[in-house]
Amino acid sequence: MKLVDSSGWVELLTDGPLADEYAVHLEDPEQVLTPSIVLFEVYKWVKRERGEEEALQVAAQLEKTEVAPLTSTIALTAADASLEHGLAMADAIVYATAAVHEAELVTSDRDFASLSGVTYLEK
Image (tube, rainbow, N blue to C red; front, side, top):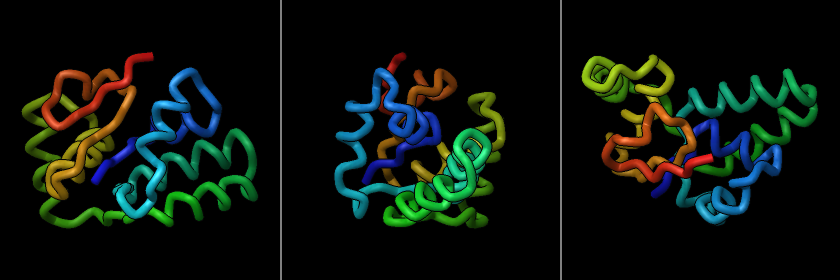
């Protein structure tokens, strides 16, 4: 199971320099875990940048993956990760979701670069 964070989805949507690398991690939506906070962040970004219609289409794509809600276990794990690694709330929730579900976190967000269980794709 892989978890691609918001930076990866935006990279793919903008056809950025790492789009092909992210596409490999997103080939099989049934093997992709998406925290509900990533759904929030990506939908918000697309709606702001490209409009509601495209945002709804992108949200539908993300919903083909396994969308993970914020549970109490994830919330407490995120709080611990935030304290231990100095992560902001959203990043801590993403990291904790990957940890609780034993998923590989794939990201270009430097805040995750040195953490275990992370595949960091440097821009």
